[in-house]
Length: 197
Image (cartoon, rainbow, N blue to C red):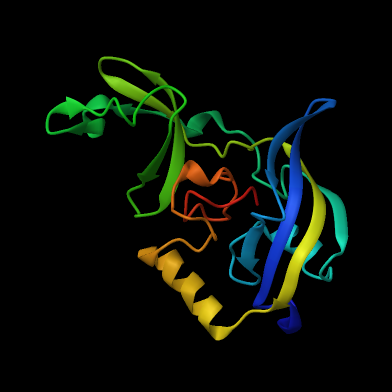
């Protein structure tokens, strides 16, 4: 990325569709009131998403597609895993409030990397989890406009760095978690309330 495009504070409003064969499936919308907010050059969004929007001035419109390789890659069957049911117990009791079919769970692998998994099945001995990104294997179609594009302040950059180190959420939402309504798209899945990039 060119130095002049690094550390730009961006607010983007868009509608996102995922190509499913010949049909476009609605995924999410970021509105003027609740735009997707990020700072460029910090790996928050998909690289190719950032490249598409970084040079567009405030008020400018965009309409582009990202291939599955530019987005979240192929859907991989080996990323569907069976985890022992006892991992999800609290004080000897299974966590029925948070662990149920179709729930999205925050997880951590052996290397300490945070990721999200979708519960596919629960049995007496294991919980089947899909660790693929919800949009893996799909072409993404973004259509929208730039709400804000300016140099980020040192305070904004530091706040984002703090959020990525676990000291809060830098997504501009009221709270960290899926209540934000846009929970698919952090580049590194550092926070559950990012958008689909």
